[in-house]
Amino acid sequence: MLDGILWFFQNILTAFYNFGYAVTHPGLWLDWSNPEALIRFIYYGGSVEFFFVVITAFLVLTGIGFWKNNIMWGTVRVLEGLANGIGRIAVWAGLIMVLQQFVIVFVQRIFAQSEMAFGFGIQFAFDLSWWAEGLKFYNAMIVALCCTYTFVQGGHVRVDLVYSSVSFRTKRMIDMLGSLFFMMPFAILTWMYGWYFMWRHLITPKVSASDKLELMLKKSRIVKWNVETIGFSPNGFNAYFMFKILLVAFAGLVFLQAIAFFYRSYLEWKEGPESEGKYLDKDDLGDPDAKLVAEIH
Image (cartoon, rainbow, N blue to C red):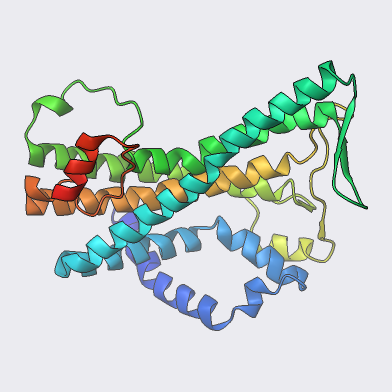
């Protein structure tokens, strides 16, 4: 037990050095023309060192936020604004998905064509099965990139057995615990598994979370880009590596939203019911009652 506590605090202290060294030596991990730099980026992106840098940054920012609540409110507004901005753009994928499905049916049934092409000169031409399977990608974009947007907007379904019957501050306590013990661990685990899962479909030789840095640097001698282009059918959608990228983006956005939710819950707990929904950029869709609530806050 004592060894575990010492290990934790040693990694917290080391995180300051690791962060400073990474910032002052960007060429060691950002110069992807050098295979070793690419391998370092891949290794540290899913490493214990990166985990403690992120956790330490969260702890430092939280400590400053406890001291200066305006900084914490500013963080909430930035992170919720990020979720809203990405979500409001990605949600248009739903319209594109519907229009593309309409065009596929129209071309297939009316013109009896097996291929669609777009563009002038050099055309972007694929089989109809490619376009049809590509609809999955738009659906994945909505799920991965609009998840936190929906959370900010209060659109997720909640199973409520106790929450509605407790006091305002108790609700905020439940929200704080939920963000720390459910949202953050879920996002971290998804990132840890998704990070190497993504890179295994982008480069060869394949990398693994169990590989040590020394072994991965040896692999850098033969590393090369090998982006996944194999579909489920011969003429089907062949950019499935993008789903892996979306998985990592999803995990990162959920983690950031967990921070924003924890900060908002704490600040509302501290300031009382009058701060509920403070600075919340919520879409009202023309609902006059929602607009009135926004104006009051």
